Length: 326
Image 1 (tube, one colour):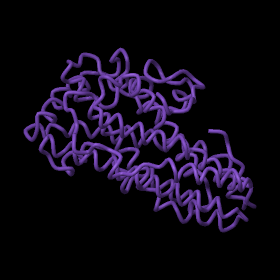
Image 2 (cartoon, one colour):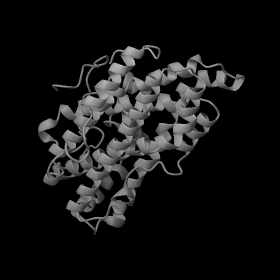
Image 3 (cartoon, helix red, strand yellow):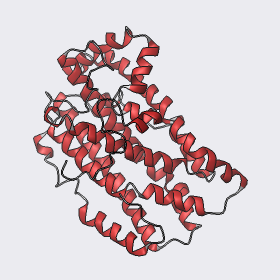
Image 4 (cartoon, one colour):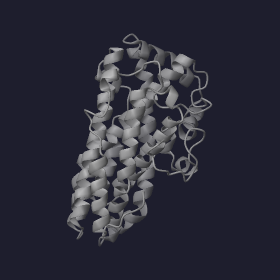
């Protein structure tokens, strides 16, 4: 989306009108009642299945579904953290800056949309859990959690100290969400229709408001700064790039606890059967695969991978076409 100047009241108002008129409704715009097609994939694996070598067709589907749920939960965890960051990362910045009221209104829409996105991913998880006859708590024990994580604590500390690593992280996650959808598009016929529709609408809305993080970074850069804040100017981007990696890799290790749940559902049993794929792989190779070959995970933890445009599952570098019509 073409950047909008934070001083352009007309442009900001047009953006407000666009987001209000194009937004979707969580309750009425999805066919939740149709449920999930358990025979289909969620997040696509890489084109050559290099990240999960040796997986059977059944195991590949289960791994794809788990990866897709991890994608949802990671995004949801980031979006659920926004209220904690809102005062220090947004309200305090605008209180110091003579911003147009439209910039405030656009921010309120941004936070409301992110809250809606988190709820949509949680609703999908609940439907999936109901269909495989497990509790959301059981499934969540395998999925990423930001609660009490060093990652979120560091972002909050940075915001409290007057840094902007939070907005760099928001920008990266939104771009990654859009690119993840572009990967899903390439496997549309193999993807569960509800999962596809959820990510399509999510990516469209992210694409409409992804410029807001950069507006706030513009505000931040224009504010008078203390010596500490001037130091943050040089380190915030680096901090936002370094923090997700260890968190994501740590959360991925939760898959090994699926052994305890194997008796609860065929889904968990198939996942438990995939563990030798990981256990027999040298740890350095496993980490390398997650770093360079695993959809979404590599985008989130490896900034260099994002610059390349991915390997075999995302669009080429520089491809930022409008999402409608894909």
